[in-house]
Length: 254
Ligand SMILES: C[S@@+](CC[C@H](N)C(=O)[O-])C[C@H]1O[C@@H](n2cnc3c(N)ncnc32)[C@H](O)[C@@H]1O
Image (cartoon, rainbow, N blue to C red; front, side):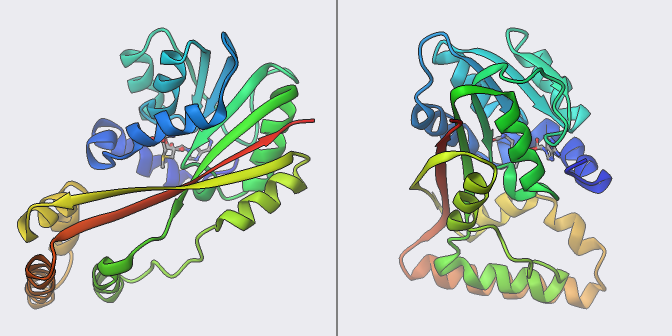
């Protein structure tokens, strides 16, 4: 397995509202498919498909699409929403497809959440036909002016210190897995927000109020005060913008 039980439960719980909370993945899915440049009528496998941001874009591009995800909740929603996609629950590190089954393998924002990304890349290599293309997206940690929010989360909830995978590391992993000609591009998707209340609403979608309920009352009050003070300052100082960014990676299976 290249994910933990806890990881699967997290995505099961997110499945219903995933693309509402992570509103940028639909745009990113389209970007990733056009970066992959699938040939007309290509057989494409989307791994860690979630609610189908990449798989949908591949269908619109004229591909025949199979999609897998480790979360039963995601697979069930994907199958209901898109019966034209062949969806199944599978682990990225143990794919149930014969060697050389696909012309293109995609995985949007997946490799960085896996416990064993190298094992998954070896599987993507195995199921790709010679000459096939792999296309992956990786979230960039572009916190910029939102650094205070990351610090606030770390101060009150801990964690967040793990090293995120970088674009050069992903290219190295691709080469180690036997892929050639790795190339990547950076994409930015800044999201402007009206005011501090809008930023709070976005955090609320991610369960921050419920998380605050687990803190002692005075800590929860202090978090809110600190949050609104910093967010209001940003608002008066040139606006609030969520600074999302990604790198798109492509390589060839020789
Ligand atoms: C950040 S989401 C991205 C979803 C989708 N690709 C998108 O761009 O919106 C990561 C997805 O990978 C799935 N996932 C995590 N570990 C996995 C594994 N070992 N095998 C297959 N899917 C996995 C999760 O269930 C989740 O749907």
